[in-house]
Image (cartoon, rainbow, N blue to C red):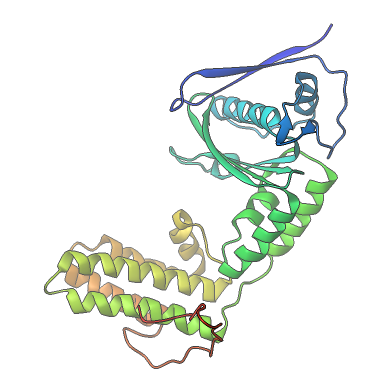
Length: 311
């Protein structure tokens, strides 16, 4: 008797619920092989048998019923829409430390020569971000993100849960782990520029404090965040995700973490200014203008990237 399974996904903002039915399976796609057929201008929808076959090879992380249902629905959508070579579930929900507004992340590796990002609700209105990429694009992400010290793609692939595995995914996970182990060092010019940028924001806040205290407070917050990010990158060779900034400060430098909390908890502008100056002394060693020189950057005629300029 053929086995039948039905998966549902829904997008409240676009209306309605779609049901995908999978009946039996007589075709084995094989791990790492595409399960659809090509036609000019796109992909022929994958057959229900092929979808069911791929679904049968999926593994699932331990999640609460709400998220488990949403993940299965999202994977069903991916299997219907794309020809995945591998699927990785990632994010704070999968790690077990998600917040009320956290979403599920799905990293999809496929063989088609395009990349795409999708955001939809699945299950009981669970937000899911889907990142679809061929292997070459994934490797480009790693190199580019390493330069910015924000290895988001490498972190998802290396630490996420392999829902649909393959030898290709094993290879990519090993490469991603190697990228995560690398420090992203600032060059002397980059180091000076990051410090200068944060110090300038602090100086601007001081300049407008008397005539525009609200603007001064906003500039102080920008300056402090810039200082903290610089401090962590210079210290650790990597930048944490925005909402993990204080957790990383607590681990890396409790003294700076205490100063940062003092700044953000202060109500009076004078107290915020004093706390910001203390953070500047600890993190960038400057409170405003300081002498430095950028590198000489060639400019292509008649125009080109002039690099750091007045700002």
